[in-house]
Length: 113
Image (cartoon, rainbow, N blue to C red; front, top):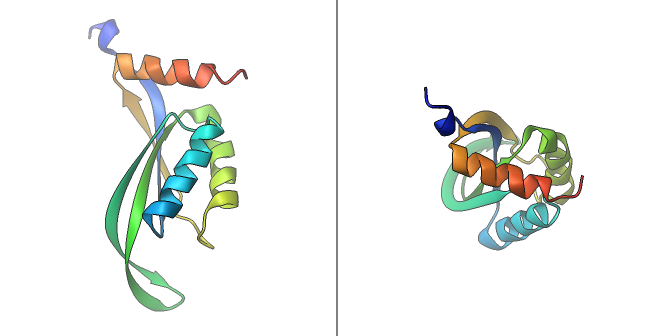
């Protein structure tokens, strides 16, 4: 395998917000804190159980791209800033292409940590 094409590890985090305005506000705050490098927002229809009742809602899904060293702080921030009592928190490891991975590392290293 060509080493130049091997990427870097990053983490994807999934959550939803009640509407576009709340999703944009949450994304902005997470990005300002440099807990993520990119957040994609997409309108979705969700169906789920809440307090023993089946719900069907329009929501906005946030796909958050971050690094392993930011996962814990990102989780705390979502718990703090989210409008829901129990925010969705699903994450998984991914491998980014070499150039995207380098961009992620560059953004996260500019945090001054």
